Structures are given as structure tokens and as C-alpha cells.
Image 1 (cartoon, rainbow, N blue to C red):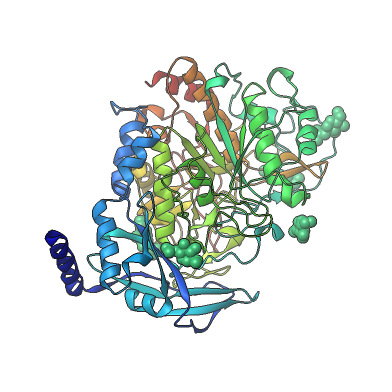
Image 2 (cartoon, rainbow, N blue to C red):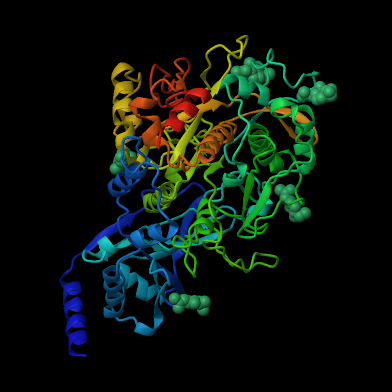
Length: 630
Ligand SMILES: *[C@@H]1O[C@H](CO)[C@@H](O)[C@H](O)[C@H]1NC(C)=O
Ligand SMILES: *[C@@H]1O[C@H](CO)[C@@H](O)[C@H](O)[C@H]1NC(C)=O
Ligand SMILES: *[C@@H]1O[C@H](CO)[C@@H](O)[C@H](O)[C@H]1NC(C)=O
Ligand SMILES: *[C@@H]1O[C@H](CO)[C@@H](O)[C@H](O)[C@H]1NC(C)=O
Ligand SMILES: *[C@@H]1O[C@H](CO)[C@@H](O)[C@H](O)[C@H]1NC(C)=O
């Protein structure tokens, strides 16, 4: 008893001595929003403090990942169990104690303060008046031109002794409010990645085409063209041990008739028919293959990702479809990650209500549960969706990036399309010095999660018009690439990036990109004029959406070969692909660039470049090298 009193007294005095320091500040108001009034002092805020996990500093994560992912490490391939991951990164008791005693010491009753089961969050319902005092801030109501209102502050403060324990506070500065129910708008939306990368669509393909014809690959890409480009002909032998997952976000959904139409014209290896083949549905947060909205824009992304992945891994290997989000509110990357890692999720939800969908969904017809740690992640996971990094707060992006590192520790390869607007962001927006985004902005606008150092970002290439499938490809102009503004450069790419910048000084001011940061993409594959189906007809589509599932299929077949000889999956590949041993295992792309923001963008060049990364995969070489690793 006595000790307890003394402890409380000590922490109270520490707190009064502890100066209040700025923890987060928003630089600008997102487009379409204006500040309308102070929030009512007696309104109640569901205040949540996301505690800093242990050992999640970027440099620590990089060291841990290198230990199991660097080909020269003695622990290469010795991936962690989910239990070890959860334990290693849990917030400390000290953090829980410091934050709760600070809140109670500030006058809020102990009974109102709750700690989540996983110790990741401290939560308290507090009035605006109480919150403003606690965080030394002011809350306002903001209004969007659509009429939607949102409560936020411009900046907030924490006592210095609390700062090391808190990663983020919600609601606070984040503004990625969901403007409307996702189901009513299939276009790209923050946190709820809509039509993912903005596929560029050509006109209907009607010409008769032999599914194995390689003479027209410069006009339209087919699975046969992809196999020829990367010398990728592999029939799985260990499918029962292997897994490949493709993530899609409701209401995007594949249409069975479109998959069959594709399968009818394009057989798999050796003429195998995939007519009638379907992905294995793994529903996450109420994810459904919805048949309510059927149109090109609702189906093309899923049709396309699945048709190619399924064709390339053949009918022997199941492709798992991670369908994320119910039909009412949809889902975000975090809503997906919750299902893969129960420690990321919490019983109250670890998501940011301003960016992620909150499950259980109270709307009529909404999903009435929250899937936390319910899904065993596939060995390779591909997502053809991306957000402008600048649309997310650094804290939000960093927390999610750490989660990808954990998947890497567990032996999962996470691939994201790099994006489709060259050095500009989604919707061709570029950054202004104050952080806002406009089409005439001057600074490059990188895309997340490709900018996370623990994800493999996949850029795009093309066969030049008139060229053969055996000729070298060029960079696709749409291929997003450049440098993060949030993440420092990881060791694995330091010398590759330094070599690029030295040999190819960009012809624009260094102020428009962040040369000391994480560069992306890491690798690339064809992204232009892919034959796909929607609404019962064939179309060519272009975008790095094409590249990620194709690379995923190749890496998955490398896993197959390793599993067949009793080895483990390749896991996080970046330290390996940049290593000296893998030099020459990619088709280096040295032509083309990724223009945007009023510049020619970065030029593709010998070795690494922030347009096509290390190049496109040479499947036989990669297979041989990975089979040689333990
Ligand atoms: C805050 O209030 C809501 C609504 O009454 C309740 O569901 C929630 O459990 C409360 N949270 C805490 C931390 O007490
Ligand atoms: C999707 O379908 C629902 C139900 O029929 C409808 O209310 C909604 O307007 C549709 N959305 C679009 C964008 O077509
Ligand atoms: C698909 O196959 C049909 C029948 O062989 C053919 O008429 C059509 O041109 C083909 N379409 C494409 C896009 O290859
Ligand atoms: C893609 O298709 C368009 C339209 O048919 C064509 O003009 C263009 O040359 C093609 N691009 C490449 C790189 O194949
Ligand atoms: C550049 O990137 C670093 C992280 O590598 C970041 O700390 C810094 O704020 C960025 N600069 C700008 C202007 O965004």
C-alpha cells in the first residue's frame, strides 16, 4: 500500500515537472474542408492513445529482418512464429503505467480509463474540455463541401515523459475522413483503397488472337507474353504446402463470367484450361464478392489481378482471395492487417476511425464482428492498391510499415504496386511546400506502402511498339517511383541508390525529391496494354496493378520449388535481391523514365533506378539462386 502511494506521488510530481512538448501538428487543411466552429466543450471524445510498441524503431526492425532475410546471415530463413512476434513487440508495462497514471493524475477518474487486452491502447471517454486540457489543444468541427463534418485539432502536446510511450492519439490531427459510404463510390479513397492504382484503359480488343501468339505482345500482353518475357514456365509440385494471396477491397469484386471468358481464350501452361476455376475466398471484415454493382470499374481490378495470378501459377496452385471489408463501409490496409495479426488489432479495434473502417459495423447489413488474427497469412501477398504517402500522417504510415516488417519476420513476402503516375501521386497530384497537394505542385508525391522499407514495391515496364517479346523492355512512363518523405533509406539499397544518383544526376532541383530517403520501387514487370476482361468483353489495361500479381506469381513458384526440397519460403526479399549474389538475376531496364510534376522524372539507367528498381525478374536465374540459399 505504502509503495503504491509513493509511486503515484512520484509519477504525479514527475508529470508536473515534465514540460509539455508538441507531439504532432498538421501543416495544412486537406482540399475541400474548412474549419467551421469550436467543438462543444461538453461533447464526449473517444480518446485513444496508441502506445509505442517495443522494438519498432525502423533501425531495429531492419536489423531483425536482416537477420532472417539477408542471404549472408547465419539465420537466413529462420522465420519467427506469430507468438514470438507478438511478444517481442508488445508495449512495455512501463508504457501502460506511465500513460494511465498521467491521465488519472490529470484529474480523470480511474474508472473511465481502460487498457486494451493486448496492452496496445489506453482509452478514455473524455469531454472536449477535459481533452483540451490534457493535450493542450483546441478541437474544432470541420466541414467538407459534401456536407460531411469531422472533429479534429491542428496540433497537440504531451508531457515530455509521456512522449516516448505514445505513438499516436485519436481523434487528433488526422483528416483522412471517409467522405461517404464506400459502396456508393468505387473510385480511389484514402485508407479505403478504391480502384487501387488508376488502371488506364484502352478500347475493346476484337481482333482474333491465338492465345500462344507472341507476335502481338507489343500491342497487347497476354499470359503467354508474360511467360515469354520472364522465361517463366513452372509447373508447381508442392502446391499443398504453398500459398499465394491476392488482396482486394470491397466493393471491387471479380466476376466469375469474366474469369471464364479470359480462361477460354488464354489457357495456362501446357494448354491447361482454367474455365470454371475460382480463387479460394477468404473473407475479411465481412468481405464479399459482391454482385450488386457489376461494371467495368467495379470488376476490372479484381478480374485482372486474379485472372493473371491464377493463369501464371497454373490450376495446380490455389490462389487465395483476401476480400476485405463489408459492402457498407469497405476496408483499408489496416482492416486487412488486423485479420493477419491479432496483436495489431485489439478487442476495441486498433484502427484509426478517421481512416480505417471500424468493425463491428453498426450500419444495417454491416459486418457485426471484427476479424483479429483470424487469418494465417499466405507466403506471398500481392496488393494492387496504394495511397499518396502525404495523405496519411507519418505516425499512421510508420505504424503500418512496422506491421509489414512483422509479416516479413514470419516469412511472408508483401508486394505492392508502386503506383501509376510517375513521380506524381494518385490523381497526378504533386506536393507544395506546405504539404498540400495540387496538380501544379512542384515536389514529387510518393506512394505508400511502396515507400515502406519492409514492403517490396513493384514498378512497371513496357514492350516498345514494334519490338519483339525478346527485345529489352523500357520503363513504363506511368511507373511510380522516387523517394519517401517519411522513411529513411534502408541499408540494403544504400549503395544501389547512391550509385544511381552519382551516375545519373537528375535534371531538376534536389528540393523536389528527398534523396536521403527510402527509394522505390524495388523491382518491376510489364504494366502496359494487358489483355483483360470485364462486362463480358476484352480490354487492354495499363498500370502497375498488372505488375504486382505477376511478380507475386513468380515468387510463389520459387517458394514452391523451395518447399518441395524441404526449405522455407523466401519471406522478405529486399535484402536478398539487392545483395551481390543476386546481381544479374534481373533484366536491367535502362531506357525510359517516369515523368510528372512538370519534370521528365527519373531516368531508367544501368543498375538500380527509381523507375523500375533493379529491373524485371529473370525467373530461371532467380529460381536457381533462391534454391541455393538455405
Ligand atoms: C466510451 O463510450 C462508448 C459509448 O457509450 C462505449 O461504447 C465505450 O466502451 C466507452 N469507452 C471507454 C474506454 O470507456
Ligand atoms: C451499387 O449498388 C447499390 C445497390 O443496388 C446502389 O444503391 C448503388 O448506387 C450502386 N453504386 C454505384 C456506384 O453504382
Ligand atoms: C478469343 O477467342 C475467340 C474464339 O477463338 C476469338 O474469336 C477472339 O478473337 C479471342 N479474343 C481475344 C481477345 O483473344
Ligand atoms: C498500348 O496500346 C496503345 C493503344 O493501342 C498503343 O497506342 C500503344 O503503342 C501501346 N503501348 C505499348 C507500350 O505497347
Ligand atoms: C525527407 O525524408 C526524411 C526521412 O528520410 C524526413 O525525415 C524528412 O522530413 C523529409 N523531408 C521532407 C521535406 O519531406
